[in-house]
Image (tube, rainbow, N blue to C red; front, side, top):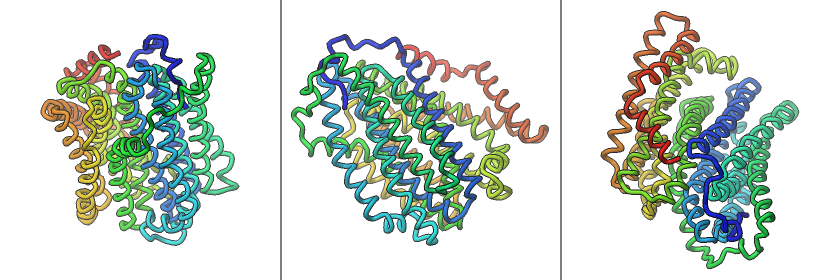
Length: 504
């Protein structure tokens, strides 16, 4: 599935793209992917409203989020290993070993989705209404297939990243999103809600095909021998343990979301849908900002090495850009979240529902900051070789989150669940930074970034609420917010930009 020793005869030089350039390309692709996914959400909101059927779909969609997050974490985790394998002229063998192991994990999941869709749907919907359970059962096989395709697309993209090529994988993700959206638009009226998971499966197939064809083409051009993609010295037990360790913590961070999503069902019909939409809005900001840069900086860091001071500087620098964007998002939704939701998703999300969803986005900004830190810190555990305890950390986080989520749901409803997500994620990040011996300086840097963005958002957006019409206040607020940030150029933001340019 990847290129082998024949492709590393040339020096491991960049193909003319810097870290910032690669990050921009990846961010643009993620933005396109998220934007098209948002359009699908708009179609679902207008076409199907907010009811038991959409609850069933969104409950099953949570499975895709978990699996796709695992795919993203594997993509990040294997990058350092693939980068080192390229330098040692065994990239094809290393990637093939990962592919074989992931196949052994994926096949049982596909069989489970096909053969036990109904009982799994019962669990996902919290034993909800029959319509919700049936919708979830119908969607589950397609969603699991889409997730598996995204898993292998991530591995192919990581193989290209080890060759300093990010453009083709980014184009594949964007093209896959376009293809999936086109299918949904064509089939949503005759097929109904099931067109959405089928479009997701098509999205995954195209996202995998693009980097896979690029790898095959390069292998043919370099006349790579077939033996180069054989997993030499392969041990399923060791590879399975390695991948399990790679995905355990990111999976748990998504399991804690699924726990909150299941508990949201207790808040009434439609609550799962509202919580899911708010989560996806905030997660999109995290993915486009911090996740894109964390992906493209793993390979350079693997080559130059990492210590505690560099780890702290890296996390703070990459987080600054994302935190600024989160501040703007919270300000806009704080002012006009209800109107945005009603405009995009239809009359079923008007009045009280839209206001609650807008408030959820603001509260989830706390989780977004913690999630940004997680997205940036997690790859460093593999770059530094300190990933052995991640499974234990994952287990502790999962066990601790369950009572916290139940208490939060009882005390604060959906907003309480959002706070519980933030607290558990923040604790996980703190323990990882402690392992990297970078907790103190990183916490100070992140605290300054969050306070700066929060203070700017409050000082700019809140007064405008009382002097301008809501949409005008949001538009003017965004211009002033980013204008002030650019004019003042906080010290942390200047240092972040300088660090990224040095890393390029």
